[in-house]
Image: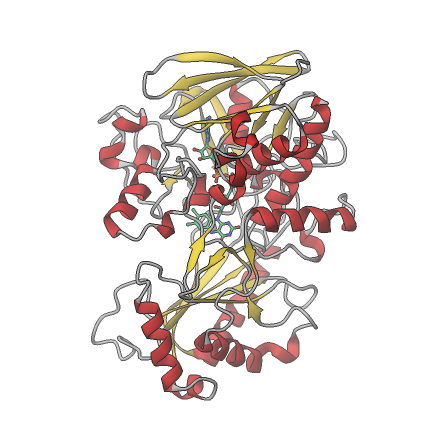
Length: 522
Ligand code: FAD
């Protein structure tokens, strides 16, 4: 090992950023070289696109992140124009579907909404920033509780956690009061109706600056910080292979998507944090193929609905003046559609699901003016229950060496099915969503179960475990079994069935991995 070891990180989302930051803060001389396949969107790398005020600029940043579905931007992203016919399906802004339907598309008929983002900051430039903590069986049994508290606390610091965002909103308070009347008596102490912790920094005008990977990078992006001198980020740089020599990796093969030139970069350790589908794909393409690679895919089945808030009920807890003040405050920041975020968290045994309730003055879709709830004075809530999916070896992604995807990697096929256990919880949560809707007002859409893959929370495909017994890809510190200096990061490492939004948990797992990595370089 040299005095200045090099750590290569693949992927610049919140997890790659957490590895970069923790390695540099925990090792006095190491360098981190990060490669990101997508383009840098914002002046500071990895900022949330939601903070961009200009609607056209925001739209452009989203399209630039859409890889094979980036329309006119494709060529500038290193993807030949015209080779891929635009598919039949469209994804959520800022993301592209795995099964986008054109040439080189992956196959995911049973998981059709599976998506990815390809840009500096990854999905973390587009996310909703909800960061609740995992609880009870959602947590990882083999990480001791006191250590977990430290890790999750560090993850909250890295993500600029804010547990009381919009807590002073009287409309948000009225929504909580109505939900509490309906459900409060059934919920355990400390796990009742509350505000949803989010990642970002509240501003004096009541708005939020949402956190992305930029927050996690922190001093690495500050030219005055000595840490920034040991950090490099290369955008539009696609890692094609992790080079392995026996039980060690020696570096990566990287293609510069601007020049199309390929080079090999030597590394003392490699971290692959390239999302829950492309991380196992890159390992597979590199000939690193533990039995559990790509298997045990889980997500959160999601049931959603939109409700027009009932004037009589809301006015029991908030006044018309407070509503007018809230709307006036909101008008100052029309670019951000979310005003108040509430939740009912996961708790066992009675409430093994998570409810997220977002207030907005307008519904997320055009409501026919003849609809009696169009232009509803008290506004709307978009609500969703996230449910568990039990990890099973049958669910997962496989890679085909004989069929190449739009980038030339072994193509993906995702296989996934819900079992009776999941269906039962979906039915229970749907019933609760109906009750929540009735308590707050009248449904203008839903409740409906979204297509599989819609949660954007894909877990388990590079799961961590305690023993190299074929049911995990990496050890309890995220180091790939059988390869001394290769780490995996991201939601794929989560081995449990969860309902909680995964990023906070994945950052906590990454902090543990990065500290072990830094120690291994000593
Ligand atoms: P990503 O952020 O996906 O980053 C991976 C990066 O790796 C990408 O930029 C990709 O281009 C790059 N990459 C892939 N392959 C290569 C390669 N071969 N070479 C170089 N680079 C490569 N999570 C929550 O916890 N709470 C939420 O409220 C929430 N809301 C969301 C809302 C939306 C609209 C979206 C899209 C996501 C949401 N998520 C949410 C999910 C969250 O964004 C992810 O959990 C998080 O971004 C995962 O971080 P990551 O670094 O592991 O992966």
